[in-house]
Length: 150
Image (cartoon, rainbow, N blue to C red; front, side, top):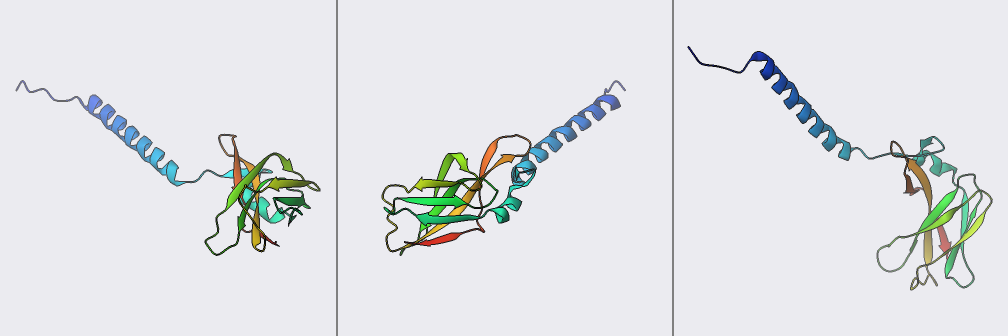
């Protein structure tokens, strides 16, 4: 009987290593299924959206949208769509400096967008911080839409 087998210690180490590799693969896969959350003022950014209070209007020349922030949540940008015969196509406009509470700012429309005689849907964009990474990320507050009649 000169047959040699794998020692129980080596077999145990190989099993533990196999389990760790499988657990790592499952963790990395599952992490992609869970969206990263963004925070503003220490809470999920979605909770800041109901506190956004703004007034939107078109400029006299109808080449920009004027935003007056009446709330205390800074607005980093807007998403707008011009209602027409086709489907709504949203355009996002961002500012380097947010529109703070009590402030007013103008967002130039993308050239070629003509809102004359149409309604314009305006949605605020907030800037939050991704948990874990600390990077800034934009979040569109879809539940707050202002409609401007052109």
